[in-house]
Length: 295
Image (cartoon, rainbow, N blue to C red; front, side):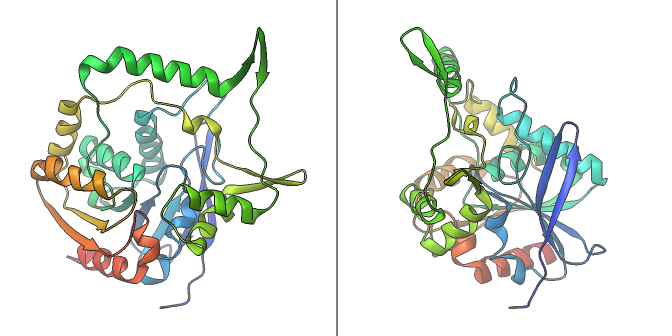
């Protein structure tokens, strides 16, 4: 493993600032790393020493890590993540970029690759394939659930009075790390990497930097036919690296069965580990990525 210098970076896209982490020579080809829901750019730091001869850029999605939160009158719609990505590509005049994307980041990257095939050279999906979708006849129920979730996240209702909802305060960073472990399959050290970038000191404790609205239920879902069209329209080579255990295993297995045959060019590899297999097995994961990009 080589010793690398990881630097903080920032891009201004419209009213938002996208922060992130980067390493490698500015003159090298870019590999863009996109994290999953409620993670941040630090989730790729275990991989960085093993991805050689590339300019590695891992962003914090809006509402995550050090990046801006969306304005108070905005929300976190899936399609808006695609626009964030398009703005980032336009700002940097990127074309033919290799993308490595985990979980939610993989879904966004897949939609982006389908809509803008000239921008993406290859796509490595980490424990992510296809999209979350819903039957068309559930559209109304999804809208109601999403709107209700949005309302409740903004205010707690006590009889006829509205009280602004506040974030939970963790007395120590260790408390926050253990809370993250409780809802994931990560070990302490892996969770610590993500949580360290995801906390901010407030008063006598710590709160999450992430925007609370990220937890809102989406008011809409793609239909299955829409999700299938996205996959069919991905022209670049795709590889899926997925863990053999963990919280995402069943979803990925179902995704391979349903979406796998729709790809134009895809390969699959199992790696022993959980949903954050790229953090558990960074050297093995990097070998697959390096070989895929080189080929």
